Image (cartoon, rainbow, N blue to C red; front, side, top):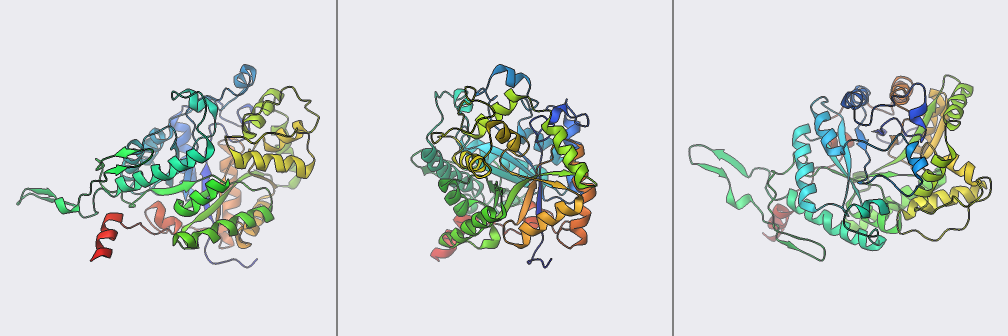
Length: 451
C-alpha cells in the first residue's frame, strides 16, 4: 500500500487486567494488579521498548453502581490507582514514552489540575498529557455533593472555561522568568510573571500558579467526546482525540468532519491527531485468533454483560428485557450521548439481540474489535491510516500483560518494516514525538501583538 505522509501514532491504553470485561478470568491474565505498581511498571516499559507514543490511563471518581451487586462482585475493574499518582511513579522508571491521564472538569477545580499536570510534566521531562473529560456517570455526582450529573451542555460550557483557566495558569510565568541571579539577589523577573485574575460564570481564579511554566508549554491536551458539543470542544482545544468508530466509512466521516472544523479556530489539521481505539486479538492463524476471542467471550457472565451494556447506553436498565430479544427504543441520555448512539447504531445495523450486543462490546466497549494474524492486524491499521480514517490508534489489549506483549512482539515489527511506525523516538517530549508545536505563552503573545 502507498502510505500518506508521516507515520502511525500509537497509544497503549492500560486498564487493570485488560479491556475485555472478563479479562481477569483469562488464565494468562494477571488478576491481582489493580494496585500493583510492578505490573504497571512492566507494561509502561514494554510500551516504551516498542516506541509507543504514550501510555494512557482512563479514570472515573466512583465505583459504578448502575448495576447489580452481583455484577459488581464479578468485575475485575473495580479498584485502581489514582492515575496522576501512578504516572508520577512511572515517570521515574521510563524515559521516553508519554504519560497521559484522565481528569474530569466536572469534579475538579482548575488550579488543582493545572498544578498537578504541570508537576507531572516536570517530573517526566516533558511527557505529560491531560485527557479532558466531563465525566459520564451519575455515580460520580453522588460522591461530590450532587444528586444527579450536570446537564450535558452545561458540562461542556464549564469545561471550556475550565480549560481556559488551566492554560492561563500554565502561562503564569514566562519561560525565562526565573533569573536566579545570586549577585543581584533577583530570583524572578517581576515583568515576566502574569496574574490571571479570571472571573467567569463558573470560576474565579486569581493565580499565579505555584509551578513554573511546564517544559512542554502545556501538557498535551487530549479529548474523547464525539457528541456535537464534544467535537466542537475538541476542534477548538484538543491536540489528540481518542475516539470510537466501528467502520471505515464512519471513521473517515469523523476524521474529515473534525479536521474540517479546525480552520475556524485558526488551527492546522496537522496539529490534531485522531486516534481511534482498537481492540486487537492476535493469533498465528485466523483460527487461533478466533479461538482466543471466543475463549474470552465464553467467560462473560450475563449480569456483567448487562451491566456493561447499561453503562454504555447511558445507565438504562435492561434487566427486565429478554436477553435474546431486540434492544428496545431508548430515551436520550444526559450521560455519554455519543457512546449511546454508537452502541444503538451497532445493534440496529447488525440486528443484534441484547445478548449479542453486550458480547459485541464486551472487549472494546464500542471501539473497534479486530482479530487475525499479525499481518492481518497490520493490514487493517494501515488501511485506516492511509485512507484518512486515523492518524494513529489507541491500542486496547484484551488481557494483560500478554495482550500488549503479543502486539509489541508480533505487529510492531511489521509496521516498522513497512515504514509505518518509528524505530526510534524523534524527540524528548511527548509533543515532539507526536509532531505537535509548543504553544506560545498567551500573555507574551498578546504583549507582542500590541507593540
